[in-house]
Image 1 (cartoon, rainbow, N blue to C red):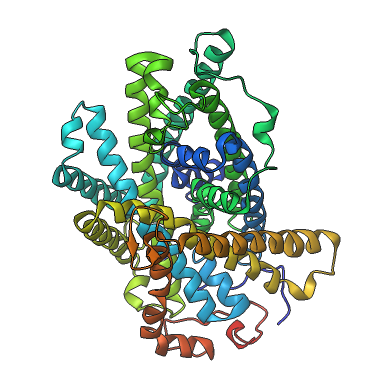
Image 2: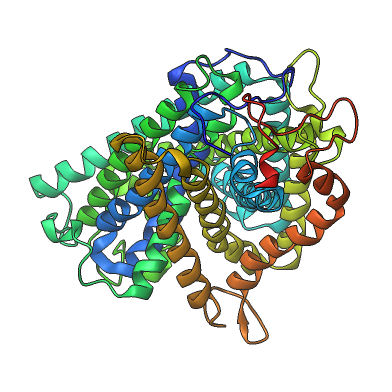
Length: 508
């Protein structure tokens, strides 16, 4: 099959609200899904422990494969805009089996992060209210976390427009507070008001040289988690104006905004806190869980401290909603094409949202959160460390799918060779390296907080969740085989086929 620039025929009448989002609204969905304030609070300290003062360099290094993958997303979206993203494009390139597993990778990452952002929302809300003791109570914390999941599932169920309006507010608050704390911290450093622990930024912080391979892999997989979420832009492409161009532009814009923000915050935090082993020093392992709100009181007093707690809480809540949005739309696309039961293709007649898929995603997150919370808090913490594996897995599939889908037209122009071939291939290779190297490192039983026999708990959770997709895929084998042969199971199940009328892509 020859790749074509013409949009591949997606099934008409998915029922989603077309033209509801513009460029900024689409970008906001992507930014909200990354949860920048929460991601920095939860991860920056561990990046510093892995690479010392090279955290800003790691954000720049990890940005490169993210940008390359974003280019692949943009090119695929221009040719075939579809809310199924990795599932649809993976199927077009490699067939439905690879496409299905790519879609499962998207779902796995969503389920894992939903449980963790619900926990963070609950903990930081309780701390903001001065209820520190309650935040340590398992049942209070889990109860409030479940309420966040249910509440954000309801918002997602109610429609894309209300979701965008809420995200606009939450995103503006996050970036405003991050900007204020960063600029304030740097001002105090250079004016001499930051204290003896402070250090002046160095150009060496931006150089990745001198970092070992394992430390680099650990830092990059952590940074992949920090950046992850911008691809939500593409999952709402069918609800965006100029759907073949705007979502791709939004994805690139979101990644650029994120890298500038993350590097600024990393430099400011390192400069103000320093690298001491006590107090607010970043080499103090007790601070690793959250080095961001730690600076609130010393930089801006009680007001800034409270504002940072509030920002991280709403950042996590924001991510809860914007993670449900794209994943539910992914299951919608899979059902429309016959790769999941048709119930997932149900769209609410009034709210124009994938109602069944949205509810299922919320319920899956509730179940995962309950099980890990009640069984082991350490397992819950290890699950977030394993998230980078699922993300690298489906980002890699998407990047390679771009190269293979356009393989027969790469020699048409220098632009096509670069943007549809070379750069996505490099992005896919980077994701493959991060995945394999991290799997090797995570095998160690002392990696993370839990272990299963001789294996590290982070590895078991991360790889185990991906492998779980195989039996689930086999449960859908009848539909997938029909899909692979280009058959329809019923009159409402379309074939994934390009407009040119060529044979189904599964037959490649």
